[in-house]
Image (cartoon, rainbow, N blue to C red; front, side, top):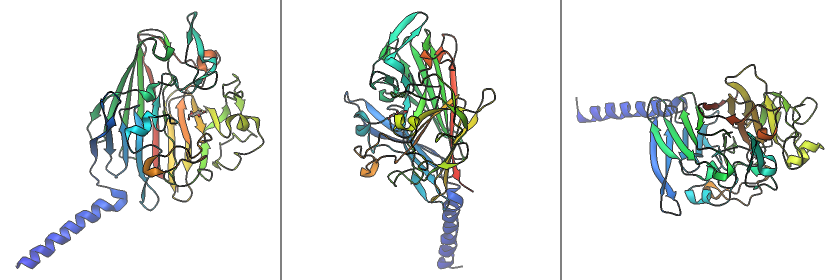
Length: 382
Ligand code: BGC
């Protein structure tokens, strides 16, 4: 047997391996975690980017600055990959003012009315960073903090992030240690496990603030995205987006997403709630029996077929249709994020719960563990 024969056999074998690796949506991709430098804090501290890859080639990149999801690369119905979340190419973009792209939000996600609440007879004053209200934990919330990161190697790669929010930080009582674990499963899910403990009675409400465009970030608006939200009720708001305390049926209103409906179908309807939110910016009361993970929402981009399902243990989901985006923020690859070009599905307890005794409680006592889970599952629509 000659040299040429061996070369042919070798090349054929190599070709087979390549085909196997590329086929079936990238089955057989090398899963794992890759760490790179994302930038430096003003004080010189180095910030990292952890890129998690699963066996199907799906990737999620997370930085320990704000525990932020920076890139999320998923296939469409033809196996074509695209990055479906908003963000910046380096740390610098996140250091300026930006609308919480991909970040972990705490100590209290969404709004607290009049930037104050009372606990055990004591009043706590927060920063009013959204008119007279407090939004997303104040202007130096968990999204603006450096988290301690630990890589979790295994069949499914993960990243554990820890942050100690000191007693009095942003006005909140108690030393609160938050531990958030991101896991990328081989079933194309990002699982976010949130835990927190405190040494003093406090309030806590954690979420992730990713902006999605299932056609790919920078690929037009999200108005034709089909959305289903598993909620028969919402918590209507006043003109400053603070819940009135009422649980209102969505039936017969533009907030009824129980059947898949294009986000844009009713977004400009003559409806007081939509006027207050400048579009959708509302908390939905998820339909559930008891605790545990339930399907909260399903979004489908009809062109690419990319589908996102959100599961949560939480009682609520904030659907925000990117109404305050106006193209002034330039993100990854120089993309200008235009009006309603991304949507958020934030798993949460209801906004302003510390001031709403009829809402599920958000207080946490020493000795107890806050524990919530969210799952973002990607697939293609049938
Ligand atoms: C809020 C919006 C806010 C956005 C931050 C959402 O969670 O509901 O009102 O503008 O976060 O950019």
